[in-house]
Image (cartoon, rainbow, N blue to C red; front, top):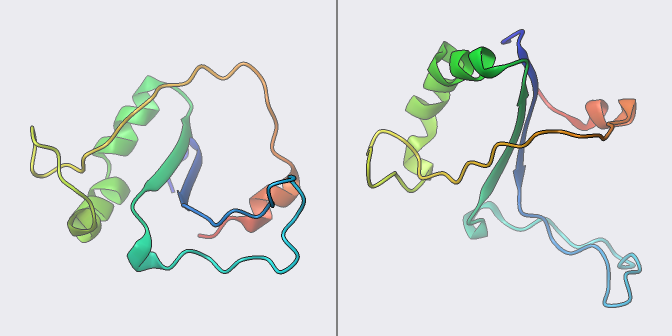
Length: 106
């Protein structure tokens, strides 16, 4: 694991879990089938810019690209890279409870 990668989460679109009045739906809906997914969201945090660069150029990410690029639309500027929309965030505050880390896999 990359020691300067502070957080790395991969999420697919999930079903709505609240009704029109913002109450929990009685029977939680089933996950959206993989073949119907159209978007993957990666939320990542790095120690610094060098750590982000190391991640993008490192073995784990390059292996991920090699094994999974065919699942993504490719960039028109670089056919060896997935089409992405990147937004750099400057974290101002927030938290993650310990229980959140237990939900993560890998």
